[in-house]
Each structure stands twice: as C-alpha cells, then as structure tokens.
Length: 345
Image 1 (cartoon, rainbow, N blue to C red):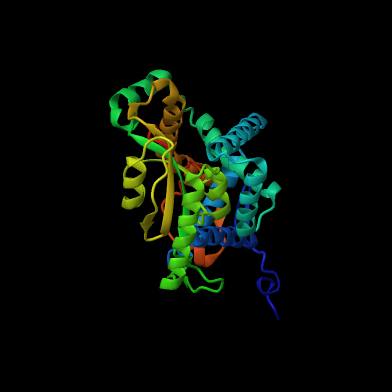
Image 2: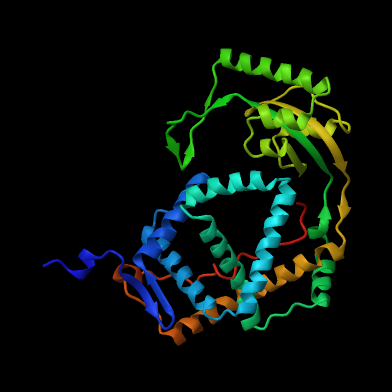
C-alpha cells in the first residue's frame, strides 16, 4: 500500500509551538535562491543537504521572530521599506515605470507576485526591529560618535567622478548560449562585425559632440544593461572600473566628451559631468547609518544564543530524517549582515 508520504508531497519537515515548515515552503524558497544566484552568475554549493538545512533553519528562525512581532513593528517596517524603495529610485534616477519594469523582471525570476514581494520585504525589515527590541539594544549618539572618531578611514570619501558612457559591445550572447556557472557565455564578434560596431560608435561620437542629448543617446544605443536606463551614468572612485575607462574618465574636463575608448567589453564614449573632490563625510550625515551598523553588529553577537532559546522554548523538531542529521551553526539570516557604513557610495 502507498504510504502517506508517497501520496502527499507537502509534508511537514519541521514543527514546534507556533512553527510549521512544509516541504513545499522549503522547496519554493530553495528554487527562489537558486534562480536569484543563477541570475547573478553564481551557483549553490555542491552540498545540497547542508544548503537545505541552512534554508530550513532560516525559515524556522523567521517564523519564531515574526511570532514576537507587534503591529507597531509592522508599521515601522513598512515605513522603512517604503523609504528604502524611494531611496533606490532616487539614487538610480528611475521613474515609477522604469522601476516597475526592473522589478517585474526580478519577480519573474523569483516566481513572486508584487504583493508577495512587498509582504516578504516588509517581514524581512521587521526581523532586526523585533530583535533590537527583544534584545534591548539601544545605540546612543555618543556610541556612534565614538565609532566615527575611532574609524576615520571609513568616513573618507575619495576623489570621484560622475560620468556617463555609451557602450557599443564587441561581445555576443546567443539566445541559446551554453551556461557556465549560471552565466551565459559570451563570444567575441568577428573582425567585420567589430568594424561595423566601431563605425556606429564613431557616428554616435559625432552626434554627441554636435550637441545631441547624451543621456538619450545612451538610453537608445548603449549596450550596458547596468546603466543605459539611467542615461549611462555612474559615479565612482579610482579602482572600480576598467583601467582604460577609468583613465579616460578622470582625464576629462567637465562636460567634455572622450574619444572612443576600447576595452574588452567594446567601444565606449564617455562624458564627464562632474569631478567630486576627496572629503571627510560629516558625522551628522552618517550618524543614522552608524547606529544601524552598531545595532546590527550587536544583534549578530547575541542572535545565535537568543534564537536557540526560542527554538528550545517552542520545542522545535526537525522531522525530515535526512535534514535532521545535518549539523550547522546557528543561522544569522534574520539578524542581517552587518555592513560597515560611511564608505563612499
């Protein structure tokens, strides 16, 4: 006779007081993680049971923490989520329509609806809020100032440039290109194809120098997916771009347009908008980020012991025998990675 497990795949893999994780929830989360990593050109580690157990532990931790949340926590998280969303749009100079287009692509990858994404994002923002309250973490302005004074290098913004570029690529990615580590393989164009691309770059250079709107040209012709919707614009210090690109950008005067710059990516036309001199960032501008960083650092210290206590109180049991035997250190997913503030954007 068929067993219940054979008839129903949505079995419970972990349970406890206020905790229940089903096989379908775990599988859905694993699929989303794999899809996101593949889109970023990364692959999951080979040890599948260890990955599954880590994801399961994160789901358990999340449920335990959310059970401690209040309506005030949810309201605060929603405000933070909406503020971070607006900050992202402003930094990327994205219209609502442009943002929605980008988000739609990500949601297709993750197989999520907009409503599901917003709910998950707000829940994710709630976790450190709950932890900070439960662990009684309250970072003072004096503590933030002390960190600022003791770490001057973290708050030095190097010389930067704000520039835009139009990339005419000399690489080709076929629609059925083989995958290598999750990233589509690219191949160099033939000499004839490169010559045609260079001719296009030369024509665009003439149009840009004749006074056509550089941002519009970038949106229409640039083949850099990371910047074309933003008019080709980047703000960066030395050491982040290709050497040829960087040397050209830093050598330009304000509003000057470069000659064609060749890199392994293709042909670039660069326009310099602004040179930003090196400076020390004011404490007042960094105080909030410093407090957040110090709070996250303290959360990470206390989180393993705290969540183990929650698991014990809830009597959490791993019911999947294969995953039960996998030993992992306590998850830090809910606490979030402590990110050093103060560095240049």
